[in-house]
Amino acid sequence: MSPQVQKDKERLHLRAHLLEFVEESKIPKHKVDQAIQVSSLRADANTWFQFTDKLLLILGGLALSFALLFFIAYNWQELGRFAKFALIEVAVILGSVAFIARKSKDLVAKIALLCGAMSLGVLMAYYGQTYQTGADAWELFFNWALLITPWVLIARFSVLWLLWLGLFNLSLVLYHQTFGSLFWTLFRANDLLWLLFGFNLLAWCLWEYMQPKLSWLDDDWSRRVVATVTGFCITWLSIDAVIRPFGLTGFWVWLVWCVGVMLFYQYKKKDLYMLAGGCLSAISVILATLIENVFEFDEAGSYLLTSVTMIGLGAGSAMWLRSVHSRWLAEALTEKRAEEKATVGDSQKTQSKQDQSNDGGES
Image 1 (cartoon, rainbow, N blue to C red):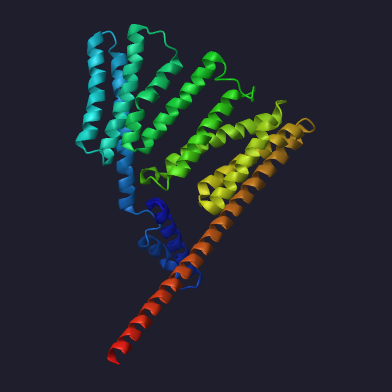
Image 2: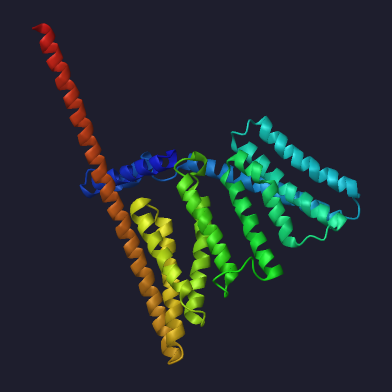
């Protein structure tokens, strides 16, 4: 079990105990906020400070990388060819040296390598612009992703992994715009969305599989970004299958995906964000189906029906998510009590064995 999973489990147990105490009136209502603050279930000032510090550090590194790009573009005529190359190469080298100097363990080192990776893309773009290599745009991003692959593996930084995945996604889009299709597929219509869905679904599944084994993949937000992109692609494909005569392949694939997400993140790996995303996707598909089949009969009444349906589905989803979270708390409380009983039973057995050994020694 990864540290993040263990931490989430402990927080769920703590939240369940606190909820039990509140329901049994062991904690007065006017002291509930204080109990939540003491139990660290709500972020305190120090937690917000650490979050802001990391966020500003990441944004500062990205700002430096973009500043280099804009500086070269603004001073294109004033700077010579070799001066531009030297400036970009120094940025790449400084990022690598800073990563090594900081012993690649803290966030500053990883941000430095992220800046170096982005500067490498600027270097490749400037090289292609200067020497007119004739390469297509997709080749720039594809080769950029390939060249930073060793850095991505070494850094073990989720933001750098997202950059790597984003570059491959962008290269797929540009390749499709250039040649029309990556290869022969069974999905002639919307083949770009199918490619993006398949690629990001694979990345998502690998992320979920490797997360318990690699502690540096414990950042839930980065995994959720990949899941959101995947969900957007398949939801769009399902809506397109409903409103256009392309067949219902997209709808059936979406249905399997939606059921899988709901089951996995409800029972196997508890995550309300994923369940909420599945609900949002289902609401979008249902509303699209409703609009496609109702608007042609009565436009005014269709607006009212769609609005009422949207409100009802949203309220129903919120109630269902609250019930799921309450069930998780009850299960966590039951599990915690079972662990406590097992611990007490083991301690009693150990004590009885010691007593027996002491009695035997006295006799």
